[in-house]
Amino acid sequence: MFTLWLKEMVSNQNKQTKRCVSQIELFVNRLDSVESVLPYEYDAFDFCQDATEKRPSENLGQVLFGERIASSPYKFTFNEEEKCKAVCIKSYDPTKAEDKNKLSFLKKGMQLNYQHHWIIDNMPVTWCYDVEDGQKYCNPGFPIGCFVASDGRAKDACIISSEFNKKNTFYLFNHVDITITYHSGKDENWPGARLVTARLEPKSYKHTDMNKLTCEESPMEIPADFTSKLDLIYSYSVKFEENNNIKWASRWDYILESMPHTNIQWFSIMNSLVIVLFLSGMVAMILLRTLHKDIARYNQIDSSEDAQEEFGWKLVHGDVFRPPRKGMLLSVFLGQGTQIFIMTFITLFLACLGFLSPANRGALMTCAVVLWVLLGTPAGYVSARMYKTFRGEKWKTNVLLTALLCPGIVFADFFIMNLILWVKGSSAAIPFGTLVAILAMWFGISVPLTFIGAYFGFKEKVGGEFCSFPIPQIYIGKNFSILPRCILSLPPSRSHQMYYMFGFLFLVFIILLITCSEATVLLCYFHLCAEDYHWWWRSFLTSSFTAVYLFIYAIHYFFSKLQITGTASTILYFGYTMIMVLIFFLFTGTIGFFACFWFVSKIYSVVKVD
Image 1 (cartoon, rainbow, N blue to C red):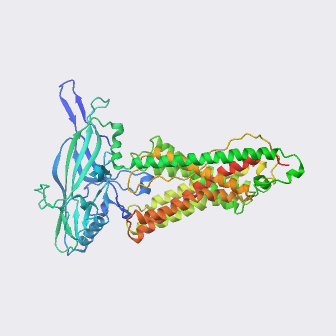
Image 2 (spheres, rainbow, N blue to C red):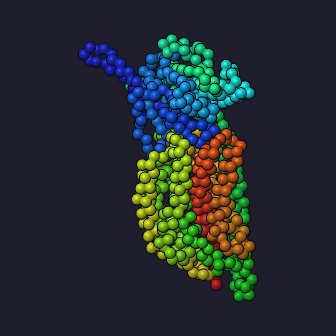
Image 3 (tube, one colour):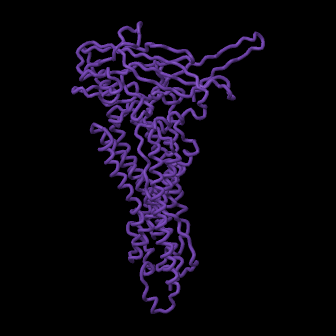
């Protein structure tokens, strides 16, 4: 992390104070839009380029997310203000095809509301503006420009100024007023100063002479019809403000201003908690009281005549552990679901501890991918253990499907999406070398670990109560506890924004586990009472049906909330959605299955069976 140090060194010999002034670099990242899923590199647009461009090394997560960070020609000296300083000039000639293509692409970016994402000292440079009810909204990006339609309707950022009023005209934000706030180091144990916030305000000025900039000109208009030569001059102003009230450790807190709807999230979480409490109470009343009476009644039956009058869930005790159909596929799903569950839990836990904060760019995705690769052993173990429980014999097929089936589906979908991004020239297209590295991690690490886990899973002896039918007479006692069980609550979508509320997300994750478990156990008990012993697949599909809700919600969100246009963007949206739906399907299904598995084995182990 780049840290600004302003050091004062006192020489013992001449007692003169020397000041070391640091240069501040501004980095640019990819440009994206809420109306398109296709992000583009900064260099894809005809903006001012750095003569000696530098690209910081990017981790796996940044590459997968499509981040492309590069240096920019915007360079400052600490505490030296600049007023309306020129950066570069871009000239366009309508007689040159290359110039027409460059300007056309720039117009397309303004029409689709593509956003810059700039970085100073590893902090996003935010654009803050007033919204309804006197609130302030801060966006970690700012638009290239805006467009006024032929009917005079101002689109997107054109509504911020009444000067943007000419019909069928583009307005380019070719000037930025940057404000950098720093902590002087007063009352702290560090020498010098440190940057704590960086904000900007985009402006549009029709500069005519690079040597005589006033930043008071009329807006920079770009007509929809390109018929005459056009010069675009880019400029900036920068000023520094001291604020010792913002601590270095909390300098990212100003991003909170970009989330004015935090109170709605807490309302949602309280609503989810009420649902969980209600469901938990219902499960406790129905299952604990009813099961206690059932078990007491079943265990008091002595005569053979009474034993023949068995009813309810005890009647199917001889069939309840019969292997299900398609046991191979179910065991593979359970192995992959276990791998995803452990990966998600550890990732969210580390994020809550602050190890995966937004300041560590790409750390969240890198952590998730590395954990998934290293968790091949639990996947192989659970899949093999369950397949052996189902009395399966094709163990080689089981191991290969566990290692290749679901990851193969995800990789095939991801590869197709990547081809579309590559054809469109998007920055989100994963380089070929990265794809090879992912395949190497998959086949070189994950697959062998899956085989190791499967070896121990098949080697371990399965309990007798799951291999003999009917189950043997086992009496543990009348008193037993029922694990709290599972539901779904989705965190709100944050498109093109940083997600930092990992504590909230982890709480929602726990609610999801509890609700999925509770709902699955409750339905499983009702089916057993109806003397239906086909619970294996039903327990998995009951909670995994949440993925169907997720998919339906994604469709609704696409048509009601998003303004995505274009066939490629639509295909990409639903392609990536299908990956998330599959992951969610495996994850929630596994939670429901093991909750029901524990419940069934528990209730049938506390009754006497002749």
